Image 1 (cartoon, rainbow, N blue to C red):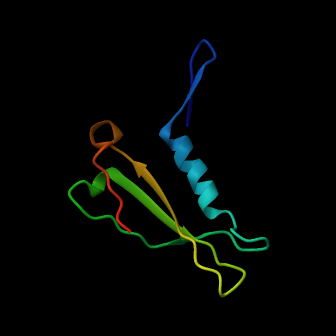
Image 2: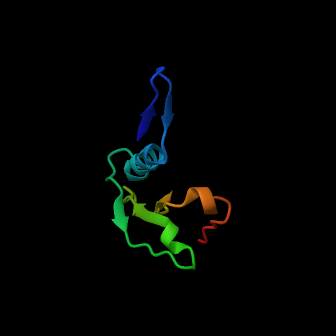
Amino acid sequence: MVQVNSIGTYKLRQEFYALARLSKATLPKDAGGSFGKRIGVSVAGSRSWTLVVSAFVPERTSSSAQARYSLVVLNCDAQKYATDIILHF
């Protein structure tokens, strides 16, 4: 997750950012609320194999509160397709 060089400098790898986003996606949105639950997600298209996608939704404490969804996307072929990935909602 972190690459440390011999001179003491470091580089955060993409796995670090994916886990940080995962942490944020699963934290409760309301005081006293539940942690996010994983929900089904699918990816289609000719380059879908390059993406690992997880989706989460926390239960809200008020039934009238709008649901909030979080996507965590890991691009497994970032060098070649970094600019070609588009998410549709």
